[in-house]
Length: 165
Image 1: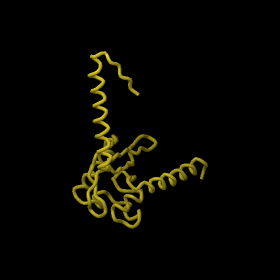
Image 2: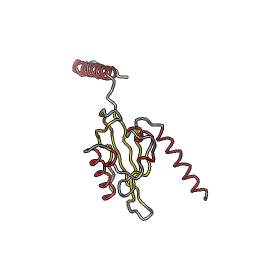
Image 3: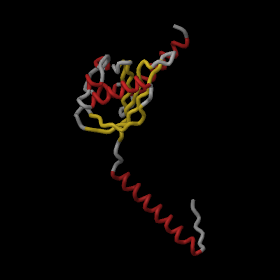
Image 4: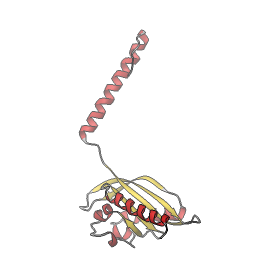
C-alpha cells in the first residue's frame, strides 16, 4: 500500500471513530441503489440493531417504518439520479422507543473519477427544542433590547444622545 492510500485509510478510520462519538448525529454512506455500505453507531442504536453489519446492504425501506422508509429511499434515489444534494431538510424521525424527534438531514452525491454518481453520504442532526429557561432568558433579553431601542428613539427628537456599547 502506498503512502497516500495509507493516509486515506487512516483518515477514513479516524472519521468513522469521530462520527461514532456524536450521539445526536447519524452518519451514513449508501451505494447507487440506496443500500447502506457504512453507518455510525448512532444509527445502529436508533434502529435497535446490535452491530453495524446488520444494516449493510439494506435500504431505508427495509429498516424504517412506512412511510418514513419510503420517503428516505425516494430522497436517496433522487440525489443519486440527479446528482443534486439535499441540504438541511427538516424531517421527522423515530427513536428506538418509537418516540418522535426532528432532525436536519443532508445528503450529498458521491462521484467517481469521471463524475458519475456512485452513491451518497449523509447526516441527520437532531434538532433539540431550547430549554424553557433558555426561551425565557431570550425573550427577556429581546424585550430589554427593544425597550432600550425604544428609549433611544424617543430621546432623539429631544436632542439627547445615547451612547451604545
